[in-house]
Image 1 (tube, rainbow, N blue to C red):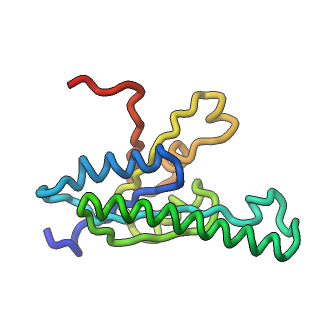
Image 2 (cartoon, rainbow, N blue to C red):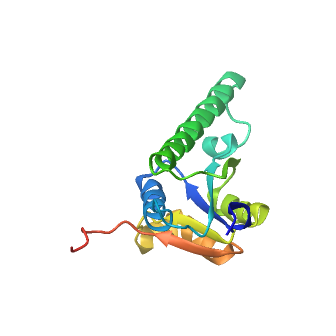
Amino acid sequence: MAESAKPLMLIAIDDSEHSFYALEWTLDHLFAPGSTHPFKLGIIHARASPASALGVAGVGSGDFLNSLISDMKKSATKTVEKAKEMCATKKVEIVLVEVMEGDPRNVMPEAVDKHKAVLLVLGSHGYGAVKRAVLGSVSDFCAHHANCSVMIVKRPTKPAAK
């Protein structure tokens, strides 16, 4: 199948170890060297908006807000560069890399629609029921709202038996 005819798989990343585990697992299992992989790869990162980081829009001085925005952009760039480096190390070409601003719960389904992705891959933070109820689960929300299949990669709690 020609590369351009392959469907797009999006991997959602943030700066967590769970996110990078999901990326590594996907690269190792679906993009193994020497294998014919069925997807084009895209990486999506949701950067929080300055208003959400402040808690209330418009709070803070102009200098503080500019500094906050600059720090958020640097953090997003660092996260995306780490993901690109992991892909390059595994000799996997990335078709799409995008940073979108907003809540990941909304950004990921929007990215799926925008890019017509057929699969969205997310890492699981492994929250229990209480934390999930309080903090919410991006992967759970995406599983119910993304217009494609969603794969949630969980980090094993103990090493797999050989």
